[in-house]
Image (cartoon, rainbow, N blue to C red; front, side):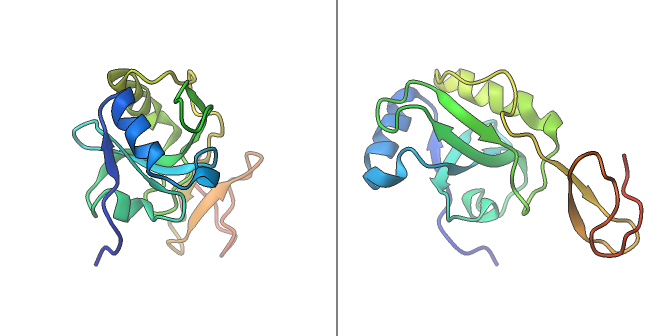
Length: 146
């Protein structure tokens, strides 16, 4: 069961400006939860939201956290990561993010500013974040796929 509200669809800079205007002032410069749904649409929710809820429980092309340079004027994306333990998107999901930002007319970086490498352990099934190229499961110490 997915709890929470599906993220707001952002198809243009105006959509983003309107959505940001409805957020608490102190949250506008903080990261937001984002997903890129299967239609390529950028969806946003407050950071405390789960990615799976933001996507309405559906599969996604990418997911993570996104921060905008000017919290209300929407000049550009200052930071974006693929940090989503619900979906564990690969860093190769960046083109879906770039395309969604481009379609909405929102300036973005050329890649994830904080890329995260996720791996599933074939021995215990645990999800892992790979740090410093150390491909060893944190739970069972089994090897992780490179």
